[in-house]
Image (cartoon, rainbow, N blue to C red):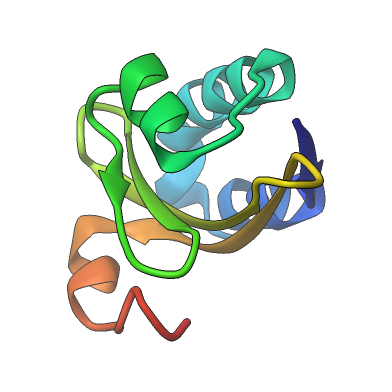
Length: 100
């Protein structure tokens, strides 16, 4: 998979020292996703069972034991993952995952 963009993830942990503990778990997800070949939501779910499949190609991943949430939009045909949001569980509760 191609992931757009690693810089979004880096900005999250670099701009706020309180989120520094997300660095390794987020990079682990990133390395895993780079090697993945998700052709459908079913492939994502089979690969990462804790992923939550939303409508219109959106997927929510639990990072660091569900301390953080990562929302992506996946273009399955082109194998591209667009990072839409990363934040704490509390920040996630304040947004609409389907529209962000």
